[in-house]
Image 1 (spheres, rainbow, N blue to C red):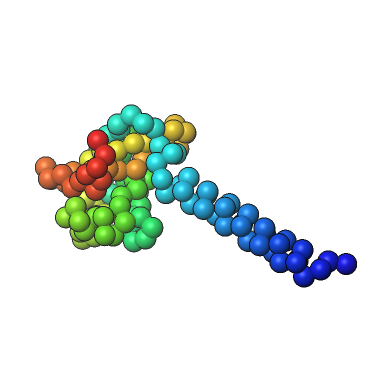
Image 2: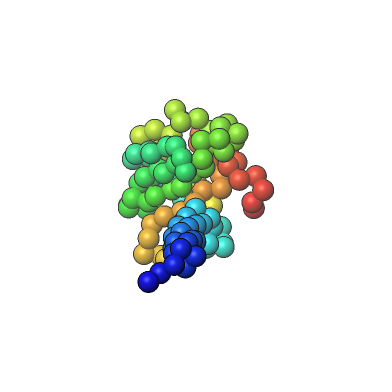
Amino acid sequence: MVDRRHFVVACGTIVLVGFATFATRALAHHGWAWAEGENFELTGVIKSAKLGNPHGLLTLTAQNADWIVEVGQPWRNARAGLRDAMLVKGVELTAHGHRAKDRSVRRMKAERIAIKGKTYNLYPDRD
């Protein structure tokens, strides 16, 4: 028979393990660990955009393929002067940032976006 103390400890352990698993997965995706350290540049045309939290995702047609380009959270885009109305289908842009370490995945995280010669610096603290 399980006493109350052992039951509470077991439940607490389950909650902590679940939270640690969630936090690790969230940080692995939303951080920079999945991306290469070297700079990468990609120019293409927006095919579709899904903007909002936790960050925006653009599907960009470039290099004869579709790429996923992560842009910033809404507050980060706004701080850089990048408005949602600028990230619509048909807009040509250049994304500067870091591509996925797994080269079979056409995905990158943008630090800066350039549209019509104007650069929007999403991560001014990064090179």
